[in-house]
Length: 350
Image 1 (cartoon, rainbow, N blue to C red):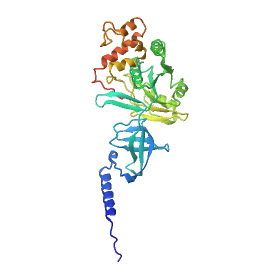
Image 2: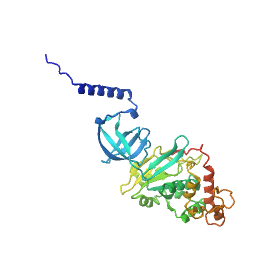
Image 3: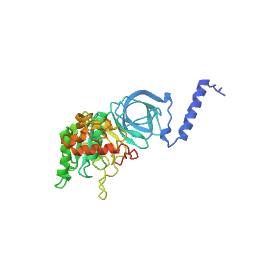
C-alpha cells in the first residue's frame, strides 16, 4: 500500500483558503457584486475606459479594445462613464464577472447634476464637448438649454446647441424657435440643425464630434438616441416616440454609455431629463454661467444684490438698455429663484 504524502503547513493553508473562497462563491451565487478576488487570481494591472456603469459593476474597455464586466473596489467613491481606470483581469471568470477595477485616474472634466438623495451626482467624465440637444417636439425649451449652458460653463466643457427634428418646423413654430436660437447665436454659441428623418445635419454633427469625447444631453424625447442611431446605424440603439397625450419624451436610455466613431472621436449617450436643477451652485457660479453678463457683474449698487428687483442692479439696467437680452435675464432670474428649492431632484427619464 502506497504511503500517503504528508501535506506541508503552506499547502494546508492554501487548501483551507480555497475551500473558504468556494463557500463564499456559493453563498453569493446570483449576487455578482459580492465576487471576491484573491490577488493571485488576478492578472497584471492595465489601463481601461469605463464604457458603462451598472450599480456595483462596470463595463471596461481594455487595452485590447475588448469589453469586460468588472467589479468595483469599495474604496472607489465615484465611477462614471468615460472614466479612465486601472483594472485587473481575473485569470478565471467568476459568476460572469471578468475582473475588478482597482483605481480611477484623475479626471480632466466632470459633468454632474444635483440629486436630493445623492447630493451632487456625476454623470460622465473626461468630456471635451457637450451637445445640448433640443427639438421642435417636445416643445422647444430655452430654460433647459440655459441650465445646461450654465453647467457647461462651470465645468469648462465646450457647449454646442443642436436643434433636432427640423423636419417638423412649420409656419407656426419656426419664427419663435429662430428668435430663441438667434439669442444664442449672438452670444457666440454654435448651433447645428438636424433631422433624423431627412438626415440633414448628420454629417455636420459627425464632423463636430470628430476627435472629441462628447456627450448628448437634453430633455426626454428630443431624439438623442435616434441621433446616435443616425450617426452609428450599426448600433441600433433603442428609441421610443414622444407621447402623443403628454407631449413628453418616453424612457429610452437607462444608463450612460460610451461609443466610438470609426473616423475618430467618442460619444456618450446619456439618460435624458425633464428637469435639470442647479441648486447645488452658488448665485455667483450661476452668474458666471451666463457669459454675456460678465461685463456687468460687480457694478450693482449693493454688494449683496440678488439681481431680482434690487435697486441699482447693473444687470437689470443692462436688460432695459438691450445690452443683454431680456429673455436671458428672465431665465437667469428664474434659475436664481430656484436655488433654494433643494427638494426638486433632477430626474433621469430617458
